[in-house]
Length: 211
Image 1 (cartoon, rainbow, N blue to C red):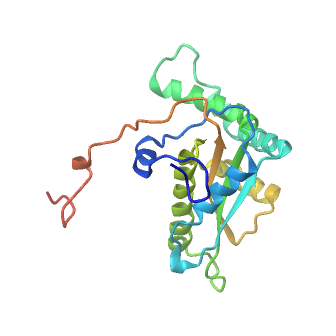
Image 2: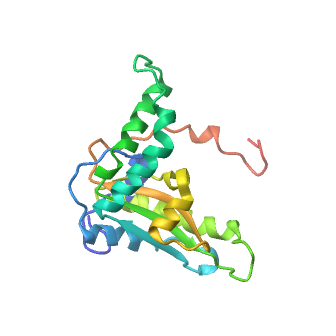
């Protein structure tokens, strides 16, 4: 099976069932061809009013990756360092895993900042209903495309740790919203299966709570 651009892929439903958030990657560079495919498939998503005002900053430069690592380490490191090494709780394990992710962020071969321009520039502030519905649909497409192309990825909001600095460093205008920071690479870990609540626990019929 191949994707529309000629590369290998997996079945759509298999991708959705196994598209785990992966944060550990091999150091191998991701070819530009694959990164461009991710953006291509991200732009197959719907957008508010078909404005298509999403924009994608694909970051591979080592200095930029180190800068992002240092920014995260400064913002997040102190609060994660408080986890006791003998604490074996799930929360502590998650904290240690996240700390490693932060401190080794520069080893991730690429990351993508998914952004969206303000579709209504005459307003004082962007309308979040239209901006976020646009950028997050595209971000989900990007995650599924990564899975289909044999890459690992995760949707994060790591840019929020110091968004003003991220905007300044990457030259992102104030009129542009940043939706997600998506690390991308060839995964060290495995894909799914996912662990999710049964459909019967989250579906209502016709009304809230309707059976």
